[in-house]
Structures are given as C-alpha cells and as structure tokens.
Amino acid sequence: MKHIFKIITFTAMVWMITGISTCTSIARNRSVKSTSINTQLEKKQTISLSKKGIKAIKMGDIRQLEEIFNRV
Image (cartoon, rainbow, N blue to C red; front, side):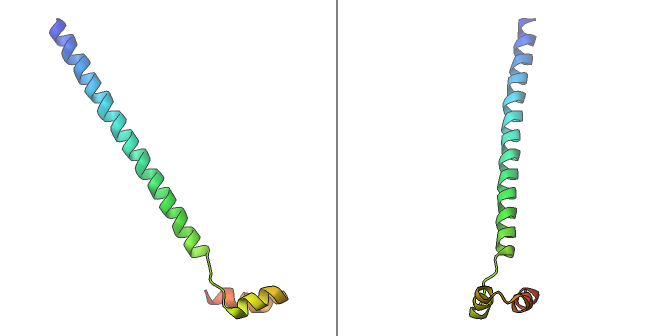
C-alpha cells in the first residue's frame, strides 16, 4: 500500500513540475510574441519625413502633409 502511495505522489510531483514548466514556457512565448507584434506596429507607424514634410509641419500646410501621408 505504501508503494502505491509513493508511486502516486511521485507521478503527481512529476506532473506538477512538467505542467508548471510548460505553462511558464507558453507564457514566455506569448510575451515575446506580443512585444514583437508591438515593435512591428511601431515600425509601420513610424514614417520618415523629407525636408518638404518638415517644412509643411512648420508652416501648417495640411494639404501637403496629406499628400505625403497618402503616398505611404
């Protein structure tokens, strides 16, 4: 009877250890994926403006800015 309890506790211990390790690995993978998605979105949203674009911002010329953003 003691032998059966030892086997059950050992398998439960192994199951808990492997279950926790897989949960942490899944959580780590999700956090990495979410940050990579965020950086990709930031890269898409970042637009390098030419000198004309900077001048348009300083002058407040909305039409010229719309033309620049429509090209992208």
